[in-house]
Amino acid sequence: MPKLSDRVESFTDSVIRRMTRISDEYGAINLSQGFPDFDPPKELLDALAKAAYAGPHQYSITFGAQNLREALAGKISKTLGRAVDPDTELCVTCGSTEAMMAAMMTICNPGDKVMVFSPFYENYGADAILSGAEPIYIPLVPPEYGFDLQLIENGFRQGAKAIILCNPSNPCGKVFTREELTAIGALALQYDAFVVTDEVYEHMVYAPNVHTAMASLPGMFDHTLTCNSLSKTFSITGWRLGYVCGPAWAIEGAKKVHDFLTVGAAAPLQEAAVAGLGLPETYYEELLKTYTQKRNYFLEGLDRIGLKHNVPQGTYFVMLDIEAFLELPRFSGFTDLEFCEWMIKSIGVAAVPGSSFFREPVNHLIRLHFARQQSTLEEALRRLEKMAAMLTSVQ
Ligand code: GLN
Image 1 (cartoon, rainbow, N blue to C red):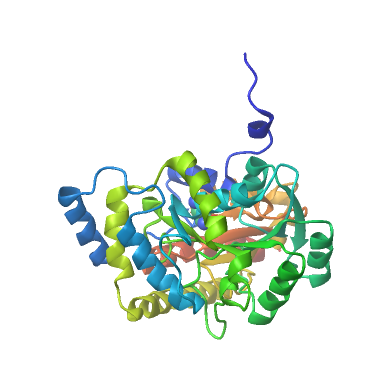
Image 2: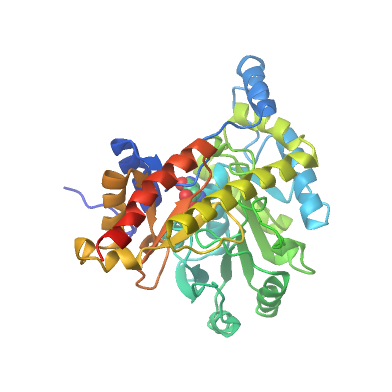
């Protein structure tokens, strides 16, 4: 048989998305891959129905339909406190997944070093391999997920071209403070490097935490490629709409990469998404209220049934500590992946093994998400309660 590339041999499929397939196979409640089980706002659905007949059905401009870019630029300009040019500083992509890949391919030569926090959203590992970059991992240390700035300075000293920053952070829910971002940004400026951000959970930041966009800090717009999407903000993960925003000279490169990777995002969906960006500010407030309620309900539920977890400052993810289970004879020698497979089959709840996010050998954490309707979360907690009972019944 002819040989495949070394590239594809060097990483596995996404464990997050694999867990969804296993969950579907066993009919479990899927709290693994993060996506909502509720509908997008009606305004988007109406606009989508309209686009079905009125079009567009042919390619949009490769870097995004004019009206979508203008609407996005309006929203981003408010976030950054700076006018963003929809023609030169923005490129619409197929989800933030493509935005990140395009950003990495725009700035990295094979062999370039790039800093990645650990735990990290698993795509970044594959992004590094596909773009030829060599990751330098910077630990975010549980349970607070703090980091050592000195390690970041060391990375830049070793010539790192960029640092990838997921804020709010998947999977650990960390929201980087303005001070932390300022310190990282100052190093990027000092060493003339890039910050590539993934800010898809920008609207899921729980009080008293606040979201600060790296590109909004003084001097940082020219050093930041901001990747983001409409997936989480408008509950349209399947529409695959994202964007990368940054200085014109860098976006010019990203537009070329994007053009040859995918040509463009789906035209009728871009048209329909414009309706979402036209929603008033109260939409984002309501969204946050909804997720705050879900977070509180789910975390209180976990406390009540006695499952140990972190308290996410942002995102819709929570890390569960399964150490106590792994100490039971029943799970002796289990990996976190095996535990998650057992959970799907025996408990009926799907989670993602923490090891798929950590560079370090971590086996005692699993990730759940709470982007689910109230009734689904109630049922998930009922099932998890049965699991929690194992901890008390065997003693
Ligand atoms: N960001 C989501 C997660 O971590 C999933 C995104 C995806 O699968 N493309 O679960």
